[in-house]
Image (cartoon, rainbow, N blue to C red; front, side, top):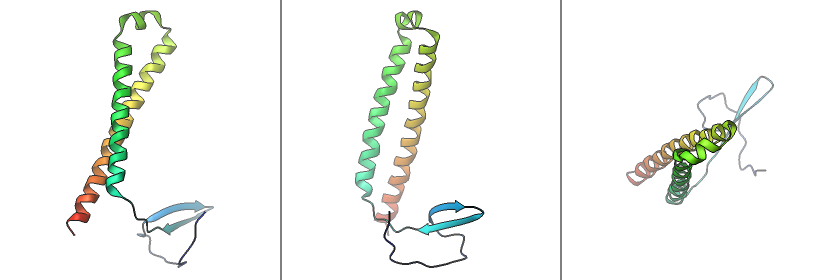
Length: 110
């Protein structure tokens, strides 16, 4: 749900916003959103620490010879997948934090 304050047709393809496609038509709804960059950075950092702890726990589990030798192959594969997914999430969070830091720097130096 959204409330529109303005509806405007444009041929400009460089409008930033939320895009959606219906049939063969592409639409973009321009969005003006205010965010608390510091709060977003803090949240990303908390998520990052959580993911790093998660990855560390999976790594320790996979380094445990007793666990690895006694677990079925499907369990080991599932743990390896969780480890790779966690590492991917860490990289995404690092990238997102970097983008937010860049935005913060850009707005502070205006």
